[in-house]
Image 1 (cartoon, helix red, strand yellow):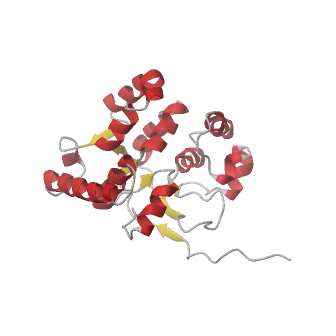
Image 2: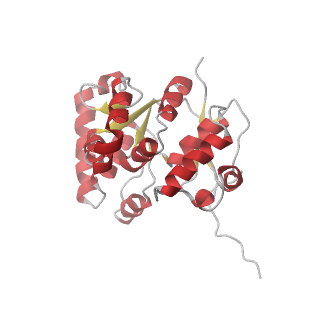
Length: 242
């Protein structure tokens, strides 16, 4: 006997101006570095005029990983130096906020401290905090952070996407071919990194039909699953910059 899936909230689609920033958590930043695909960040910045960013906590956490020091230090330094990725602090924040940058920074720190005190890991706590204060989406694969935040009745960011939402956006936007996306999937699989369920045992092309994109390019045909699969499937529609 077949059973119906549990009811899901209606699809939430953000049809607003592109966000100024996308906050990237430690786990997702590491996946970009492991796959040697920092061009994903460049594409988002160049095509949609959205600045990929990390908190100071994520930079500390990322640099603290031994494998990063050994394998990816130069790549991380390069994308920071060329500003494909920026660290949000009192020096950089004035470019992205219209109010007092020091006040915004202090709010981010206060919320981050509170989230860490309530059980979120260091990087997730300050990433969520920055995203909430700045009203920006997050790229993070850590569902434990979501569960902890809900358990403690903490506010979640407006959207929590996965690394593969970034990969799928670059494919939908015509920047990556299917073979490029599958190569990323294979690298992450070999490295025992998190993969969405749709891609754990399927190629990118086959898995895409079962993957709901949380970022989409409004100028091209939308790919992937047509209906939300989980309550985190909040879709942000992006416009290309002239």
